[in-house]
Amino acid sequence: MFSRSACTFAVRRLFVPLAALGVVAGCTATRPPVAHTVPATAPCRTLVNDTPGARALQPAFAWHQADDASVAAHAAACATVGPAVVAAFDGADPFSAPVRPTDVVIVSWNVRVGGGDLVGLIAALRAGAFTRGEPVRHFVLLVQEAFRSGDDVPDRLPEGVEVPARIAPRPLRGERVDVLAAARAAGLHVFYVPSMRNGGDPRLPAEDRGNAILSTLPLSDPAAIELPYGRQRRVAAAATITGVDEAGRAWRVRVVSAHLDATAGPRALWLFSSGLRERQAAHLRAALDGDLPTVLGVDLNTWAGGTREPAVRVLRQAFPDSDVTVGATFRFGWVLDYVFTRLPDEWGARVVVLDDRFGSDHHPVVARLRANGDS
Image (tube, rainbow, N blue to C red; front, side, top):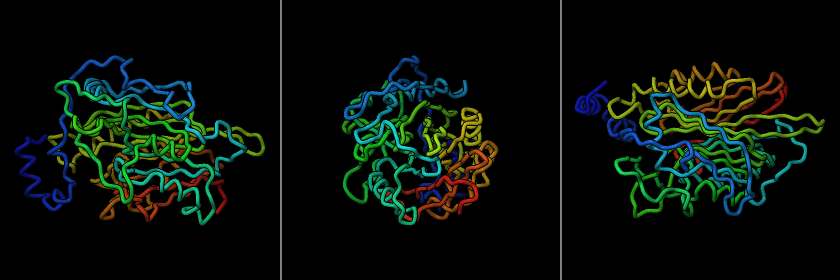
């Protein structure tokens, strides 16, 4: 490992152009929080199911703990965020007419903590902007860097706990809209799991940020999956969508939104962070093991090697149907965002990267489920 002085020297001598672009973040990373004991019943490990403006739900909620080495750091960071939320806002169908899994469009997108226009993307999706003019009725959004504000976020931080800097980009139009407000405006089902605090300035409204799933179809079996701790706390969100096709056949697909670490910690250069991401990917793969059809939308933060990074290889072993060569999703031709699929033999998926970023710094990745043999 590098000392802080050695790290600084290496950045200045070897990676100055990248540092100027904000890529080398390891040397200025937030330190892991000091250990605090957080009981399993603490708000950050619970689920809110009676959000105002939404139907009260009673889903079973599963929590997958990270590896033993990460427990203390997760507990400390967990104390700075609010609970997970599951909701079905007015307009979200409690039951759906017959729908085939191949009618569902799935979008994975890092929305840059409110910089991306979720409401605008949803409107474009429904209008058929990404499906050759064919309006989309059923879709799932797998969102990374979603944010939530409001009374559910603690207004005070535990003493001695450092939190990530606030990210609050100015949207292309209007004000930043948190993920629950976006789901409410679009009349969707939503499951949100905070990973970390979004800044600690007591003069600003309290916010947390994490991963979310928004869907036109009901969400069941919500689960939070803590990942091995690196520079910041990371928790994936998983749920299941279900339907019945015209022939009366029931089907289920698990959908997952995840976001891996950008760096390996305050003493490591970004170039050497792929080992941490490999461990996080392996932990995620283990939590998603099984034969349930699954679609994973994830920002892997594969700065060091793109599709050649170990994290990609680890996930492709568990999701052999995946196409990871669909194109760049970030500036400078970098490939950071992926959709991994594990589907029945009779299903497939066509994956494309959208040209429009809708105000985010990431391009959305769109997966259209299809029956094998269809064009």
